[in-house]
Length: 180
Ligand code: IMP
Ligand code: MG
Image (cartoon, rainbow, N blue to C red; front, side):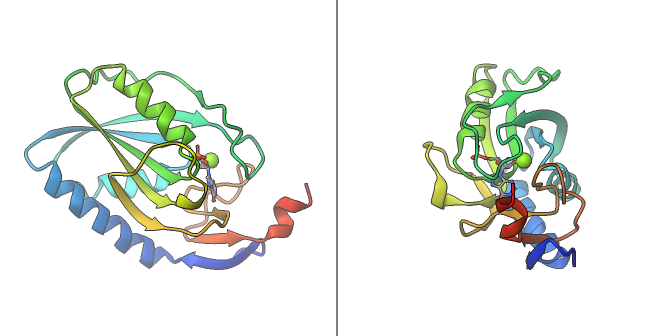
């Protein structure tokens, strides 16, 4: 285990099972339908790549980068989007795939942006849901785990761009971010 990690919350095996069970629900709901799955970069890269390999409907892939955190553990409240998606989502079913739903600001912003492009539907899939700090009226349609109000890293999730490569998800030692 990495020295900066206090405890491992979700092992690789656990995450694999979680992703499978989320994919199962999506497969049931989108059976026979066409879907555009949008990976929210960078945090959901691992979840997205594992999830789509478990989907059996027709799926187009898109990538949208969003940032709101900077180098702190508290959301700045301002969401910045990177390059616009190239796929025309008008009249299509869209599934937004996110790593963690915290205050909800990022996903509220992204959802409103995508809805302005006239898709048939927009649903939200998040690996982690941290409802304690929610300040926007937004819910996930699909979620892997509900987590406590702890700062977690690994499996795509970062602190200051570090720890994304850890294959498990763990709680970051508080002294790592409080010494800043
Ligand atoms: P929100 O806009 O507050 O819902 O924040 C969502 C974004 O904040 C996520 O996409 C993550 O990038 C980041 N985030 C929120 N909580 C955590 C955490 O515990 N660890 C790492 N990143 C987090
Ligand atoms: Mg992040």
